[in-house]
Image 1 (cartoon, helix red, strand yellow):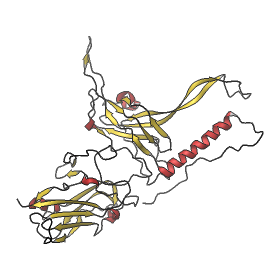
Image 2 (tube, rainbow, N blue to C red; image 1 turned 90 degrees about the vertical axis):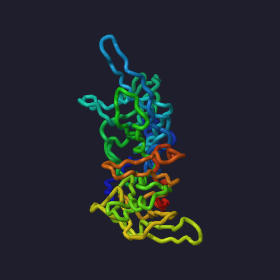
Image 3 (cartoon, helix red, strand yellow; image 1 turned 60 degrees about the vertical axis):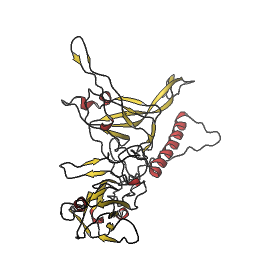
Image 4 (cartoon, rainbow, N blue to C red; image 1 turned 180 degrees about the horizontal axis):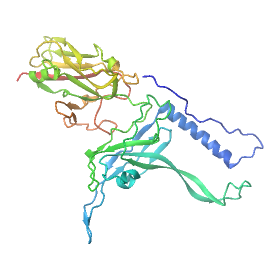
Length: 398
């Protein structure tokens, strides 16, 4: 995908030049501060990227119960979250530091337009934004002849943050790289979580808070595998394995789902292999490759999942191992970068299909419930892109 660049969004860089006898005023020192701050932000934004560096997790805050008054029964709004301490960098290169845990009343923080609707929103997004405020009143020694100073002014600028809560879905950053123009209004907000199914008069549950929308720090967010329709390492009967592989059902097959768009034209022969190892082990065991093809490929340029089914009639037998390989380095996303496909710990979630609405089942694994980022569910990838996605299951008779 080729991006159209309209300019290099960088301020003019002018550095203060000292010489003997020069008179320095407040404006000169302010501009020198701005120069070094712009240089730091330039390096952060274009060289390193932006996103959440550490912490800034969103957790529910336990609430009280309904209470009665003498006149009528009133219900307190109890939908509150806690943002843990942490560090983030916004798309402008500003560092956002949350030094202490911060409790947020979602209704109070919600943008004003949502308060005027007849129906309370059931879903909101929570984020943080860099903010500055002048502090510490300081008396001046003398005033300027130009009249641009007062007898008393703020002597320091405190770098702080502001909590943002909205009922409108934030605009996603669809840029392929941070080396480009910012993506529109609200670019400076780091969105941390989406909260679903809100009952404003009840405390929130952890299951209502989806933190997967937060952007990890970096120049780009790699496309990863978010779900598969077989259980890694599981043992299936022969008939169950046939159903998963689509051996006799044209609507069946292996389903792999991605976090973002991948190019349909990268779904080529050889990208996916199904290898059967007979008997599972031993020198007498044989192995063979099962024929297959992509089915139901959309006629569009991009897709978020593919289906790959068996096209040959070989029969699986007791104690066979079915090894599935997806060469994710050959699957290109909308930015023509490889999918980050490393199957870390075999923990890509099982994708339950066959119902009207698919769902990801994350309750099928034990140990390491959350990935290293601390935000689930697990996906493929280690942040580098490419590699090979490997998985397998076993076959038993009966």
